[in-house]
Amino acid sequence: MIKALLKSESQSIWKELTYVVGGVILLLAASKIFIPLKPVPITLQPTAVLLLALTYSSRRALQSVLLWIGMGAAGLPVFAGWEPGLAILVGPTAGYIYSYVFIAALIPHLRERLNSQGWFFDMALCGIATIMTFAMGVAWLSTFVGFDKAVTFGLMPFIIPGIVKAGILCSALKAIRSYRTR
Image (tube, rainbow, N blue to C red):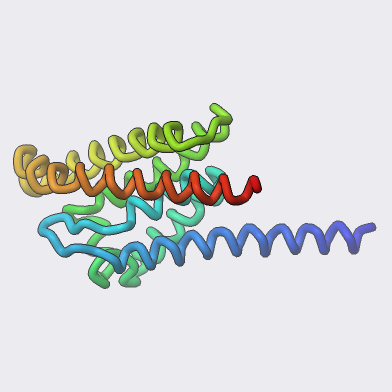
């Protein structure tokens, strides 16, 4: 019995590790797909965080995001443009990245607590997450360039792409969920 319990615990640890590493790989890949606008590039990082938030538990999503940020803090080039990580975490775009921690913790919690699914529900969660990202990102960016420029360069170019990316993500999740129920 003890052997079976230890084997089960070992399998559980590997399963959790696989999810977290998979989340980090997703974030790494999403970081490398970007349009190099200044001071804030358009990336797929927020979309990857939304995917984790809509599909992972709070713990798995948060662990993935924290490990990814930790890799950047260690100096690894895990963010957009293969930039050295530590410089990004204190630079103009850091507020956006830090918002991902809160999104990874809050959105899965809301999803689990409200126990609802569907395209409109997922879009509402994406809307909450996007507002959090913009609020923290623009607030942080404004300390570097002022509030007006932060809104002009850190919010306005991202509204339409953010809506499009969220819509595509939620549509893909709806299609996957409907396929799984067949």
